Image (cartoon, rainbow, N blue to C red; front, side, top):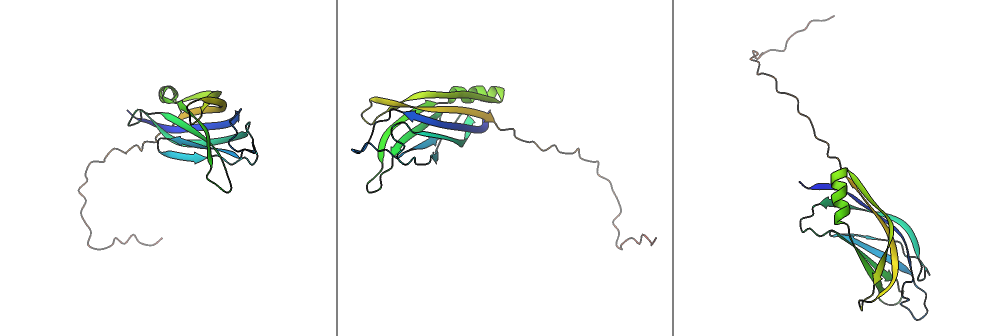
Length: 165
């Protein structure tokens, strides 16, 4: 049985991110991806290598997923005005166990935790703090009334005159 619900992400902050520009001024933001859905945090102008977002994001989720992949990908970017934005690192969080627990109990939560940031060269620098929760959606079922036995009533050709009061 597939269980559907809402996966809520609390993007808290990051620390010790690698400065991507020679000026060491970063304008970081995060692209969050889960099961083909994408969200974007706000850009922190001159947020530097220790930005704080404190933002919430919601994704539709189901357990088990069709491909059994339950990875939340956080892609950290540095916004640039006159050139393409720079990739500042990424973190991947497998939320499969959280979804399984939430599917069984109705909800589950991982409080904010630090995850290491992986750079393009596969080295690590800095971390990003994220909390994750899942709440099962309750599907409302419509109860049908029992069918009444078929009654054979004569059809009337003329409207019934009920009289006046």
